[in-house]
Length: 89
Image 1 (tube, rainbow, N blue to C red):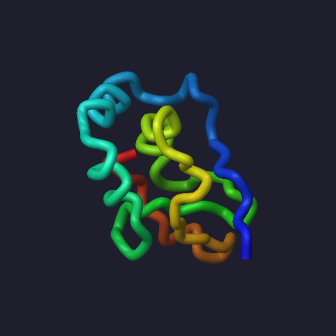
Image 2: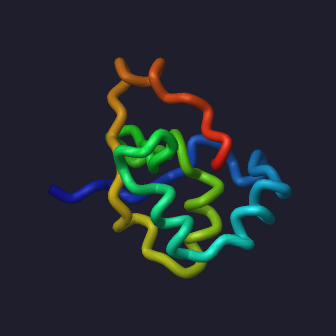
Image 3: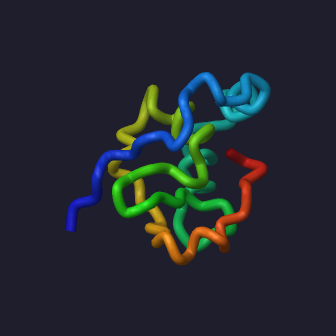
């Protein structure tokens, strides 16, 4: 089963420069591992690829990684109330 490409929920202008700088200092493998499904702040998307959790990390990784191929947790509309706002981004 193929998954759609990742797409932002909000415009890039809404990204926090401070958070982007923090993420930019982390190693690529650390960022990728932080997105692995099953963790509290894993990469979570809607079925259409809209990113719900992990956008700052995806934004930083996009420069060097095929982010569309990363494993993700698909969150259905009925599950959205369970997605916490991520301090990681």
